Length: 260
Image 1 (cartoon, rainbow, N blue to C red):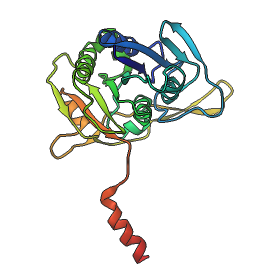
Image 2 (image 1 turned 180 degrees about the vertical axis):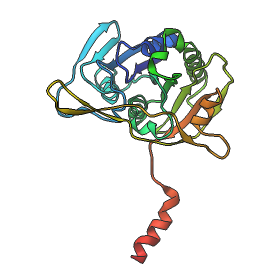
Image 3 (image 1 turned 30 degrees about the horizontal axis):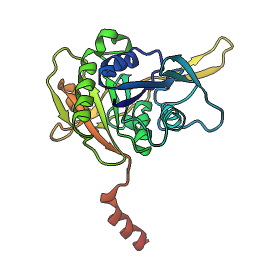
Image 4 (image 1 turned 90 degrees about the vertical axis):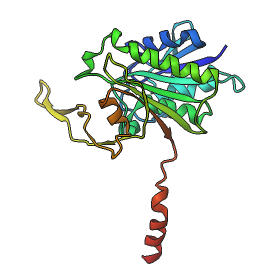
């Protein structure tokens, strides 16, 4: 039986996590290790300054006390799986909200998949886009995401993982009842603003609360980016690699150094 490790960045109680477990249970043996609390936008962070511990919720379902998604994968590989018995696949999600464009670098969901491929295990990050706010997502909102992840994982287990080393699949599912199909996409060009809200506590002390940005983006010439696909009602599948070297700039940089 195939072994699947599931994690997320919304916390062990999230509807998306439960939906993911339900969707993939027919395909293999599921182990869940998820953060105790929401860790959205924590990036690819590991906890190095305090101890972490697994807390059992039920059979093969753990919360990692104050751990990040990357902690969940890293520690699971070392503590729950033997070296010669790693999971066949890591799936991170189903995230509440999108992870597209440069948001991938912020994303705890995507970072769990990054950690998995660094550990030599194929991985998928999957996110459910919401309509206007996170509150628009209900348990029923994850039905399409469940169908998508089941089909993709079954295709992998029936054949093979389609990417090379240190690369993972980043999947975003539109908020729609009309499934137009899949599009293979590149990561889009997000347009960012600033959504920092200034408040005062009862003692008059100032504090800031960071909000989220609207999904604005620079349109790709061929509409072949993740953000365009979602806008048009398609499921976006983007191959992501961890090597972020700007190879097209290397010769220019060599010349710049030499001329300096």
